[in-house]
Amino acid sequence: MNFDHTEDRRMLSDMLKRFGAEQYGFAVRDRIARSPQGYSPEFWQRYAELGAVAALFGEEDGGLGGSGFDIAVVFEALGRALVVEPFLDALIAGDAIAAAGTPAQKAVLAELQAGAAIVSLAHAEAQAGDELAHVETRARPDGDGWRLDGSKAVVANAEHAGLFVVSARTAGGDADPDGISLFLVPARTPGLRVQGYPLIDGGRAGDLALSGVRVGAEALLGRPGAGHAVLERSVGKGLLALCAEAVGAMDAARDATLEYLQTRKQFGVPIGRFQALQHRMADVLLEIEQARSAVINAAAQLGHADRATRERALSAAKHTIGRVGTRVAEECIQLHGGIGMTWELPLAHYAKRLVMIDHQLGDEDHHLARFIALAPQE
Image 1 (spheres, rainbow, N blue to C red):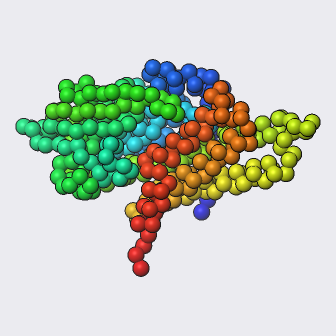
Image 2 (cartoon, rainbow, N blue to C red):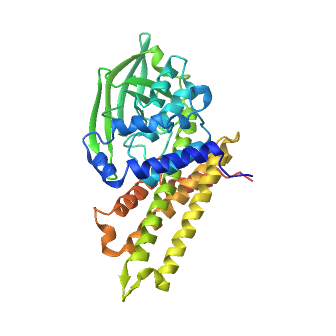
Image 3 (cartoon, one colour):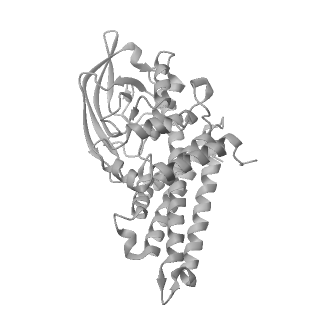
């Protein structure tokens, strides 16, 4: 199988990496990440103008790509620059709309790809852990529409999203895959309250409280009770995106550490000449390449017709990224010594982001168990 990127993908990758290095330096990123908004509308639109958002969607939805390798190229470049703009939810929520939406519902995709809208996924709940099928929020028929009651946790950019893709149960028990429905809920809908807060690795999120939120019949996304399959497909793309972002962050941490080893001196020589540190750095490089291989495999399998094959590749990549990302973060900080822990050094922020990626959309333990559960039964 040929894993070389097409010329278009290579050009997109080079352009995004160059833009991140020249326009989105650490000082700019740190200011944006700590700002009250938690992202920059200006940079969100500028990235969209470069085609970074459109590359996440297929041509049938007005995009420029949409394949696993397109997603990986974009998010690897974003990871190198520690970009905090709302790309992940644009991908997950946008893909759910593209997969199950009506033509009228899909109209928002053009705004999303132009950087003129923010759409967030409101699915996670406080009691759900990492289980995708655990949904306690309820949706009941109400006249010719629906009434939603419940709560959602850690919704990215909740304070600034104009539209939410909300999961709610229309049938079954709290942990049943069947009976989950998806709804498009505008942010200003009466009964919807948002409480925002900063995230530890930059940016902002919020908790949603839905009390008697009434939406029309046109708000239902796809068929009633069939939302789990849509969520699994869209969250799968999010898993690949996170893994690719982590590889980009690991590459940046590696480069910073190599530069430090070549310039920091002890006993009159660069510390990179010490054999013990060379061995540790070599181990880091090997681990990063293993993580990259897992991402390549997941990108290749993203469109596989067999669900188990696709989901096992995604869980294998997420497990690998969780393990390797934590080790790379720890080793790079230790190779820097005490300065590696300082807030002013970009490395500390890369390390924090790598650790937090492990906890998004299921940590390494969750995905190891999922990988085993999806194994073929003999």
